[in-house]
Image 1 (cartoon, one colour):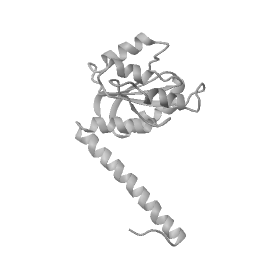
Image 2 (cartoon, rainbow, N blue to C red):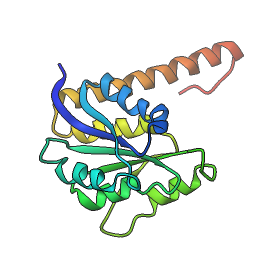
Image 3 (cartoon, rainbow, N blue to C red):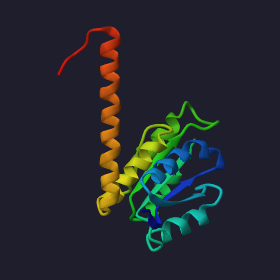
Image 4 (spheres, one colour):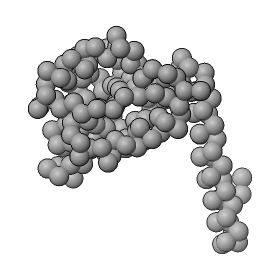
Length: 173
């Protein structure tokens, strides 16, 4: 059963970021969490950004995932406007310095304006973190997250067993 109104906003500075940000949408779908997805540029549409962040909570959003490349101001600017948790996804863009400019722009926020920051291009982790935040108040989401983590554990143990059989040695615990 899906939660029927968007609880997570996924925003990006440009449609070129969609190839990265799609992973956040995909994992939220997997956890049956409704989301909205749009383009909000901190530099090219600053008034749209202010309106989006300013009205996000009253529209029912509980978390915002913001992806941005280059100077990557979008997550921090949104965090400066809203009281909602903001998860920043640094995106390696065509004008990027190996993505480090984006990582540092999102990571190095001043005190009082926190942005949770995931690894470069790690929108899937941003989606999982958003689900964990939502899961603190939605038991179904929390159960889905527990099952997801259990599946990951089984996959690793199965791979370890296969490796042990293929190599005929290994670490037993």
